Image (cartoon, rainbow, N blue to C red; front, side, top):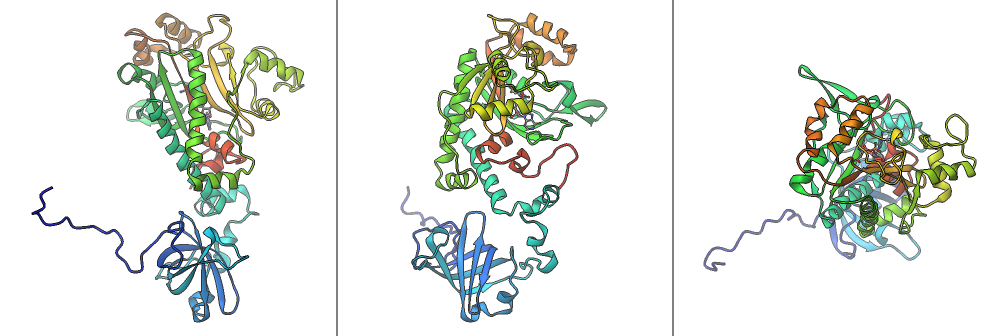
Length: 458
Ligand code: 4AD
C-alpha cells in the first residue's frame, strides 16, 4: 500500500442518524435509538397506548406508541399491512411481558409516507385472506396469502434449503450446470409432456434435465442442476404440480450402493446445514414441532418386499385387490406404508416395465432395475433415481421396447458410443422435500405461485 496516496473514501450504505436497522437485527442493542421500516403485522391499542408488531421479512419487532403518538389520525386509523418508518429507543420488555427478541421499540417519532397506508374496511387484508378463507380463494390471492406468517416462513425455509443444497453439492464436489427448459425429447413418458410451438418445429417443456446431465459427465465430472421441470399432470393431488423445482444430480463411475449412500449423505447434510441457522431452525420447529433429524442409515427395502408388506398389511392396489409383482404402487398405498413405517425409506429394484426406458437392469434379477424412490412420512416419494443403461446396444433395445424413435436422442445415445461409463443419478422434488420438512399438507403451499391442472395464475 502506498501511504502517500489519499486515504480511500469509506462508502457508508447507511449514514442516517439514528442508524437504520432491520427488525431482526441488533439483538443486543437495547438502549440505543434506531430507525426501522416495516409493515404492520398486528396491532392492539388502548387509549394512550398502542402496541404494533412490525414485520419486514427479517423479523418482527414490537413497537410501543404512547401518549400523543397513539392519538394521531394515522394511529387511530392504522390498518394492517400499512408501511411505517419509526424512530425510537429499544428497551427490554417489562418482566412477565413477551415480545419478539424480548425487546420493544419505544417510538418518539413515526411517519406513514404518502401511499404507504394499506386498505381498510371491506378491503382490509383480513377480510380478503384469513384462516377461514377457502383454499382456492387463498390461491387466487396468493400475492396476499404470502404475507401470512406460515406462508412466509415456508418460503424463507425454502430459500435456506435451496442454498444448503448448493453448499452440500459443493462439499460433495458436484458442479452446477444449467440445461435447457425447451427440449425435443421426453424422459418420463409422453403422457405428461407440455408441447410448445417453437418457430416451425415442435418442442416441449422439459420433464427432467437428467439426459442433459448425463452428457456433462465426460467433460465436468459429477454434476447437478436446480431447474424447473414441467409435467402436464391431469390429476389433482396434493403432491403434483405442473411446474416444480427439480434438484437433480448425476454421478460418474459409481455403483448402485454408491448412489444410495450419496443420496443419504446429501439429504442429511442438507438438513444439518439448513438447521445450523438458528432463525431457520426456529421456523422449521414452528411449522413442524415434531421434526426430528432422520435416523441413519435410511431403511432400504426392495420393491418385492414392499409388495409382500402391502399384502401382509391388507393395503390393496388401485383395483382393490392384493398387490402383486408388476403393480405400480399407487400414491395412497405408498403413503400409508411410509406413514406406518414412519421413517425415510429407500424403496429399490422396481420392475423394468413400470419404470423409465433408461434404467439399468439388475444383473442378478433382470426383471428389476437398479432404481430407487426415497419415501418420506407424510408425503411419500420425494426422490426418484437409478443407475443408467450404459451399453449402446441395450439402450437401443430399450428405445425399441418402449416404441421410442431414437433419432432425436442422437446426442444421448452418442454418450454410449464415445466412452461409456457406469453412472447414475436422481431427481428430488424441492416442494415435496419442503412439504415433508415443514409439515405442509400440499406441495402447492411450498412454492411461490403454484401451477397445476386448472391453475396458471396469479
Ligand atoms: O421420479 P421422477 O419422475 O424422476 C425423474 O424425473 C428422473 N429423470 C430424475 C433423475 O433421475 N434425474 O421425478 C423425480 C422427483 C420425484 O421424486 C418428485 O419428488 C418430483 O421429482 N416430482 C414432482 N414434484 C411435483 N410435482 C410433480 N408433478 C412431480 N413429478 C415428479
